[in-house]
Length: 304
Image: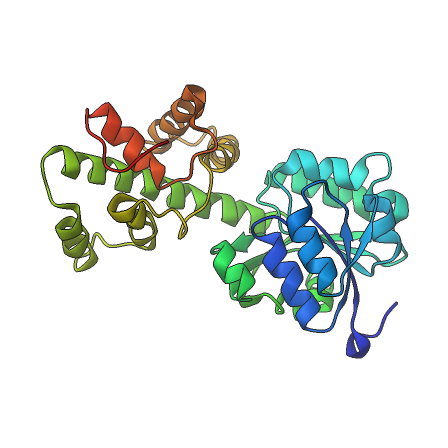
């Protein structure tokens, strides 16, 4: 095992919008990073230029790492990377810790953690809150579930890219919190989109509407991140795709199924699934404003 004072041996699998920033900040804190090779080269090449190494398979990443971070699209990819041929488990060193930052299905997270434990690999879930810009700045929020002793061994690493760290309980609890948090987030986005589309259809000046909401109790982080698109066609503050929101809502639906008090979520889930079915899965959340405005017979910004 490597010594923390000389830089830990870290593997990182999934350097997308969020993972790139987290991995970059691990490098900046002096840790030795090995990435899983990927055909999408831009972010990989950027990190290699900063000193990261590259390996061809998850097993090869695990074989040279004390801790392996995952930041993947869904539980499907997590299971493939951990358990599949050439997966992390196949190359795991003694005492390996897996830190899964994926926004995943908590049921699958707990099952995979138990499966890895039988093979001598510890796993915690540590999904990420906030935005890609905050990932690049090392100012994410991390929600962490798992054995406290295991968490203690990796807190210094998570702190490299997080200014907030909240321990939530046993493995799977952090992902459960993240899924419920994301339900609030994407539901708020749906409310903002409907309200702004309605305001535009009723002839309200959207800059004045922005100023009014910003000064009132209706203001929210989601409102502020979505309005740059309505005002200027700018999606940069919120580059989350509708398909990701739909995926997270599916996980929420599974978690909450059987609960009596669910007056809101069926309508939110139906909206996002309809948007995806109509071919809008890769549009960003702020563009939901324009999609609903178009249904009202008006155009706010270009949807081309």
